[in-house]
Structure formats: structure tokens, C-alpha cells
Length: 349
Length: 225
Image (cartoon, rainbow over all chains, first blue to last red; front, side, top):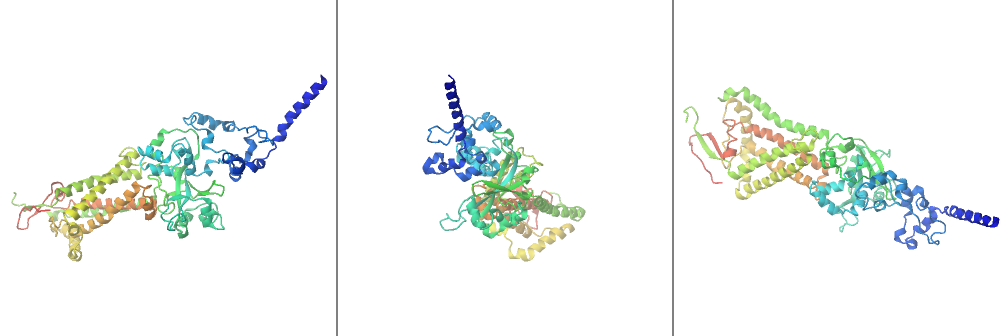
């Protein structure tokens, strides 16, 4: 009996020790296979650079796939997957209360191997998630029923700006460009504007960091003067800064908020958000890095952000005064002539 | 007729299409001005209700005025064949007419002198009016209209917007040119009261007929237009 107990104890100890030894499997070991499409197939392929830079990169593979041992895949056991709500309880609860919950899981919008904070993702990429279920053309036509210039609105706004309780809006400027290569005649003029990637900007920046294209003095702050220089520089004529109104605090309570039907939610002056803007530059790993832009630069009359203007919100005070002066000029003749007309009225009787 | 009052002759000055066009323009442009002010200053002006209502009204009035402008252009160039004659100052207008008319408005008028220009259907405008309308109708109105059409269609016409220099230049042009149009409007309305009576120049734009002091002939004149 004593011998049987000793054997049982030894067996239990071995069972406990096996997973402890196997948990040592490093992310590098996982990626030795999972970075090769030929080995694991396209479905299980992981981009090591993007994973390293993703929000989850710091957890390593085992952070979510705890069951995987050194014996993987020879043990034939499927890799376990963490449940998102284990770490993101609040977001999970918020999302579960929405109509989307039954139709799309977290992974349908957020690839856990590449996911990044919203500030490091372009607005176009955010909308790409939505359009995988809600095609852009269909949405433009659905919004066009009530929203003037629906195409323009959908282009300048992440969907979540109106369809979630997200807050703290800022204007994010993304470099966009006309691809000069794909034009049949070699001209860059006829191509539609699209977001410029890291490679394109690096090609223009040469040895310098791409931020040097705009941040001339390299102080990490984009001034109005630097914006004007960039916008007027002939060598960058194929580049335009495209602005999007993007929330800084993103929520998952996907719904239509009543106050978003009121255009003045965005189209009214005085909101601090209308003066705050950032420049988002694409990085080599596909993420975006932000640089703050001088406060109020967005309100410059003509050259600060020539392609970004929000009716009723980003009007320029000097332009208003000039307009007022022109209208007042039109009153000079009626008032001056009218006064003399009154004083000399006897001469015309 | 009162013996002390001068004899009046009646001239059919404003044909029906022109009068319809004028009042369409008048109501359209005033609507555009007020709705435009609400669009630019939504926190101060809410005359037309919601922001969206102001946008829709501004767009509708803009299209109406643009179509009305096109009809005016076609009517005078293709049907009445009077565009150049009515709106482009002649050599004589430039040499003498402008000074003569300016002298009347700014000097002789106050001394009780008479207007050197007597409107006829073929010469409705005095040299100063011709010059002003040439600027308004051939430069300001088309530019405000074209910038407005671009602003109504930013996404589909983006290449044209970029050709102008970007959205901000386009908005700035539209705003300042509209202000200039409104500046003209004050002068236009005021000058319309400078006739024999304050309504003497306004009435023809409603009835078509202008009454002016006869210089001998005292005839009623119904032109073919």
C-alpha cells in the first residue's frame, strides 16, 4: 500500500511538472513556424513585426494561448484561446448590450495579433472594419437619404464618431497623395487621392525621418508656419493633408446617438475640439504615430489645412472681419448719399 | 392731370420674363444671404430652424438662382439679342457717359438737376449702371454660383476643388464674393429710390411700365422686344 502511494505521488508530481516545463515555450519558438505561410498556412500566419508592435505583443503568444506546450503541434491538442473579456471586462459588457453583439465577435473587428490603440490606427482603417459588413456604397446611399453630402461625411469621419458614445474629438491630419507611378501617362495629376503609406513618404524624405517632411525644425510640434511651408512646397505637390474628425476616447456602445442628428453637434463654433489637431504619420509597421499641431492652426484662413474645412466650425475670424468690411463698404454710398439727399431735399421740389 | 405736374410718358421697360427673373433673383439672393449667414454663424443665427434646414434651403435657393441666371443669360443673348448692347459700356459711355452720370449722382442731383440718362428698352441702363452690372452679372454672380456648385459637391468634384487651391480657398472665395454681392445690394436698393418719386424705379420692375417726364413728344411707347 505504501509503495502504491509512493508511485501515485510520483505520478502526480510528474503530471504537474510537465506543463511547468512546457510553458517555457517562447514567442520566438511559436513564430519560427507561424511566421511562415508555407508551414502553418495563411489562416495561422502571424506577422512578427506587427505582433511585436501590437498592444498584445507584450503578453507574448502564451499570454492568450496558455495551453500550448513544447509538444505543440505533435501533441495534437488544439491551442487554447483566451477570452477577450478575461482582460476587457468593461468593454465586453458595454459591447454585449449593443445590437452588434450577436452579429460580430471581438475578433471580427479586432485582429488580436495586430490590434493597436485607436490613436495608432487611421480613420480609414477604422471604417474598413465597419465596411466589411456595411459596404461603403450602401452606407453612402442610406445616409444620403437625410445627410447632405453623405459621401463627404463618410470620408471625413470614422463611423464611430456618430455611432458610439466616443468623446473628445480632434482633427487628425493624414498625408494623402496621388500615386505618380500608376498614371498611364506618368503624370500624378489624374490619380485619385489615397492615404500615403510609409514607403511613399520615406521615398520623399530620403535619409531623414518622414516627420521631417513637415516638422522642419524637428521639435515634435507642427506649427502653422510649418504647415504652410509644407502645403506650398513644390516638391510635395502630390501630397495633401486629409483631415478627419476622430474621437480620442473610443467606446464600444455602438448605437445611434440622438444628438448626432443635429448637425450643430459638429458644425458649431466654439468647441475646443475644432481647434485641436494632430498629424498622424504612417510607420513602417503599419501603425500611425501622432505629432501635435499648434492650437488653432486648423482655423487658418487659407493655407494651414487647405483641404479641411467644417462649415460653421472652422471659420476664420479675420475672414469674417473682411467680409463685414466689404458689406459695410456697400453701406457707404446709401448712407453718405442719403444724408446729402436729405440735406438738399429742398433743391428738388 | 394737375396743371403743375409735368406731363408723363409711359415706356414699357421691363418685359415679363425679365421681371420674373428679377424677383426670383431678389427673393433667392436674400434667402441665400440669410441662410448663408446661419450656415457660417450657427450659434448666433437660427432663423431657418435647424442647421440642416438652412443647408437645404441654401442649396435649393442656390440652384434656383443659378437656373434663373442661366435663363437670363439665354434670354438676353439668344432671344432678345441685347446682351452686349445693354450691359457693355460703349466707347462714348467710357469717354463721357461715366463722368456725366457720376457728376449727376454726386453733384447735380443735390442741386436739383435732372438725370442725363433717359431709359428706353434698348438702353435701359446708364453708363454707371452698365459698368456695375457688367461686373456683377458677368463676374460676381457666376463666380459665387460656380464656387457654390463646387461646395455642394465637394466629394464628386474634388479634383476641381483642388484645382482652385483647396476647400478653404473655395469657401473663402464664396464667402467674400457673396459679401461683395450684398454690398452691391444695398447700393442697388438705394439707387432704385432715386427716381422722380422713391417708387418710380421700383414700379416698372413690377408692372413693366416706367413713367418719366415727357420731353415734348409725350407719347406712349410699346417696344417690340
